Image 1 (spheres, protein in one colour):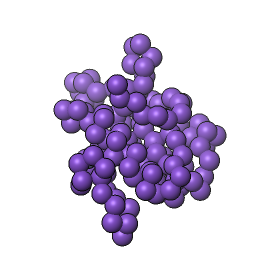
Image 2 (cartoon, rainbow, N blue to C red):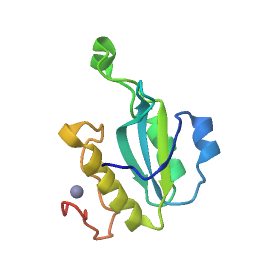
Image 3 (cartoon, rainbow, N blue to C red):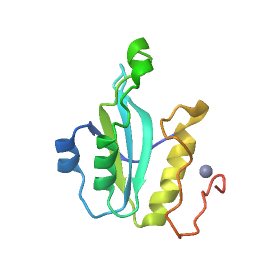
Image 4 (spheres, rainbow, N blue to C red):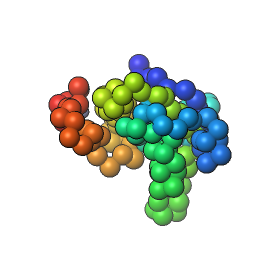
Amino acid sequence: MTNLDMDGPYKLDASTVRQRVQGGLPGNFAVGHLDNGKRFAVQYVGRHDADVLSGLMAALKAGVGKPGLTDRLFGSKPKANAFKFSYAADQRAAFEKQCRNYHDFNGSGSLENPSHPAAPAGSGLNCPLCGA
Ligand SMILES: [Zn+2]
């Protein structure tokens, strides 16, 4: 059973993000949508090593989870409308959790993450699951 181990889901908009998420703490987040059964379906997993609030705001600004033109034409992908998040003790915990989330939810490349999470610069950390 895969589990994000995060709080939420909450509505994906700037004011809800600012209201729910405290700045200045490392952490993890997931962007996705609520399916017909109102379950949270993950589309993207992210983290920020120092400030999960700014990580989420950056993802929002970048349009993470918004269908591309092809998807809009053919209606194959739902638009992201919800997020979950959690705080992490430090950048190592945030990185390792993002790796677990990535491997847990990227079956058949279903996430919109373009590639495997990158370790914090200069940390020398490796993914605990695949060693990347
Ligand atoms: Zn990995």
